[in-house]
Image (cartoon, rainbow, N blue to C red):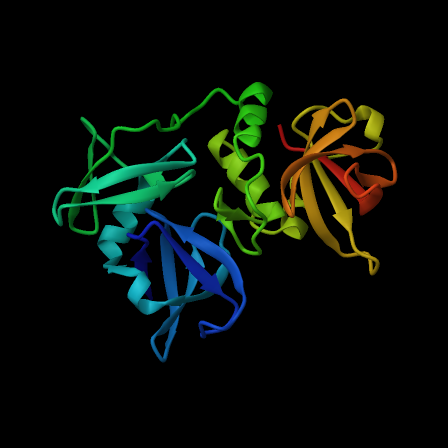
Length: 259
């Protein structure tokens, strides 16, 4: 078994080993991966954070040995909190943008090491054992308002519905799985919309009954979700009503309480 870490700002992960294949997710700076297969300049990886799998360009994944991987994996990371911040690679002498939710491990006096390089970071980081609060979760969600929708995206430069919910909850100290259908198996089911509380996850299905969309309930029959962009829309028993288009866009299926 082989191992790697992302030492770039963000790396696309694709369904197949080709640049023309759809992007299914992204790897952020500092995230660990297990390399499962290699093929023609591509590596099939499994993300350590959520066990999601896909193909990445082998040139964009920094190889590390098993000992280094295990050492990094044992350390509880802290996550960058700003939509965009900068780490400075002191070893190679260059700045590198990092996106919200990028893990930083074992930082002392604004310095940390990763894959043989020394970095400096002076931005805000999450706590390793945060006091989980709905107020913080909603604040993190609002930070992404108007971020464009991007299939497989996990940043303010492009994010999909489940990437949005996963990142918001991550910054708030809660781990979610990657896809909407996976997140739907987490938490406690809520029977009625009237019983929903701020911070609950709301799921929507397609015409064939598959869960394909998720958003965060913010109270007062409103939901924040990524559809075209991260936006706030009206929610009722039928689903999401878009005031701009004057029509329902998603059919309500399920409500789950995570916090």
